Image (cartoon, rainbow, N blue to C red):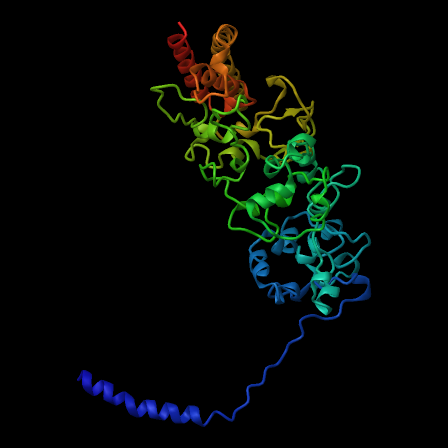
Length: 459
């Protein structure tokens, strides 16, 4: 039967070949469709959608990859989101459509000027600017580049992303501008080995991002660096991670976690350097930081570093939003976005986050309330800091004694890494900002082990 089946195919194959032979004279005609309609003059050369129903942007006809990624972002449904919010008003539409908001255009354009459906949603041109010149002359010289900066010449967050992601109701840019990410320190930014974490352009290069942007040529000049702006951490075109982040925040790994890409430098000691810990938050949270004396066993993972207890890890405490209302009237006052990146920010009399420093009692513990009450969280912070204070004092006295009487124990030019050097590193780790709260179990264990090691080594 199997042999008969194979033979039966032959007549059919012959018929198929005969049919193909009869088609060789047929002509295939390709029909080009219109990629866009000429925009109205008042639209300011913005093109918007080729098909609003399909959410196909004019740019997406050629830039297929970014188009497909963008379709999955909240920007692609910005118009419908506004209409469903229950608070849609005409003055909101500029930030939910293609307009002069978010780009270099300074006069009403796009949806703000025409009200046309083709400009609904936050499309490519919202950030890149008008695309008409480029689609009529698709060359490198006409590419409309988006800007990375969100601060204007007066350091106000009013450019790019900040034109929409600001204000009392969504002050992402305003809070960011007051954070450490919002400024550039001249000293580390001027050193090539530091720029991957202390400049926006350096971080993008370290992340392997090769996109072009308006300031790309200027940042090559000394002293003209970008801070860690929105597009450093968030991919404007979309990503597989929450909030369009470039890397996950729920990965318990110094190499994979977005925050730990930078917040993990010298979490363990460098025997060739006399410098102490430098941004050791990641390994401290994960319980792997510090100098480990002989017979020390770890890691010591705190609840803050546990995916089960705190699935967002760093962001679980440092990026939290909450709304501030008037205690008497209940009226809206401010919507904090967590983009100060402070787990327990100082607040004013109304409860609005403000610049520090301040006492623990003058901070808000809203970020802690998923696991604790605000009152208990404040008590736990005080208890953790109080519990390590005598250990820090005891270890400091031992380190000072050895440093005075046996200075060679701190000689970094030799190949030895002494108990004194390791203990001094752990002392610096315990005194680093927030280290105790990040992982009180690890800090206490390291201090106790260091004290014992010092007493054994230098009786």
